Image 1 (cartoon, rainbow, N blue to C red):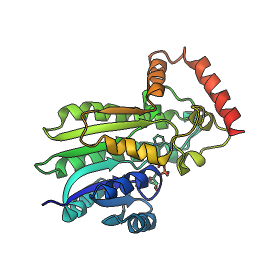
Image 2: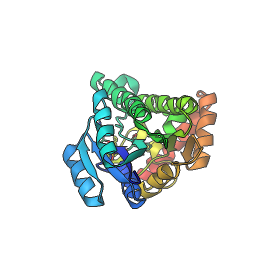
Image 3: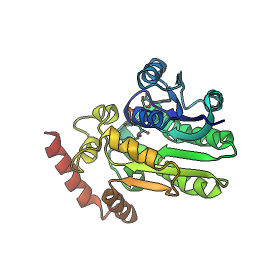
Image 4: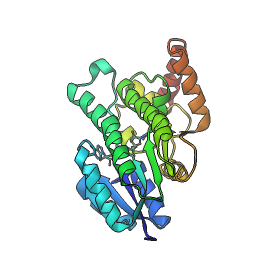
Length: 259
Ligand SMILES: NC(=O)c1ccc[n+]([C@@H]2O[C@H](COP(=O)([O-])OP(=O)(O)OC[C@H]3O[C@@H](n4cnc5c(N)ncnc54)[C@H](O)[C@@H]3O)[C@@H](O)[C@H]2O)c1
């Protein structure tokens, strides 16, 4: 079959929608999924995707069903596990429901997606692109559990990329703050929002989606955006207590920017 398909989860809006648009432009038959079923259908219609499906990534079986839909549209060659939630707040302040949702959507949902993609790729192989986050590379007070789920996603990509059979590539994208509803919905006076907005300008959906799509076919496993922030975060990870003054300075910078 010459027609190729791909899946983008959490694609009703934001980065996922941006990725789906670029993959449509590349000529793939794109399956857009989201827990917001109406949003997924609307986005699919607006961008010319092959299908828009309601999918809660916490449901393990749903990933296999999505893979089957994609296979009906063409050879599955790429899967973007992008769906995520961004509840901010100190670990002690999150509700039990928020804790469960963060782990189940950001980590387990990504695990189910990755397993379904690996099982569904055909002889020509394919690419799994996980939307992780810069927060997965170092300490982020005020966003600790979110960051922990993203650190697990980075770890997953690193190891699974080495387990994957010939022709299958696994990547994780680690963007800094992106101008989407997720950040807009964070608490205005929270440490997380200040830190996310401290790095100069916010990234756009377009440049972040482009970075995700550029990973397809490449041998690169991890990509941080922008690159220099990745190095800074990794230094913080080596010595979290020593990074406290720098994080406080970043938060102050973010607070000024938000004003
Ligand atoms: N915005 C940022 O600053 C930023 C930075 C780094 C990484 N990310 C990551 O990028 C990805 C996309 O985020 P975004 O900024 O576009 O946010 P967004 O909130 O605009 O989009 C996330 C999408 O995921 C969907 N979703 C949530 N729970 C779901 C579930 N259980 N099943 C299926 N879909 C679900 C939402 O309905 C939404 O459409 C997320 O994984 C996020 O963690 C975002």
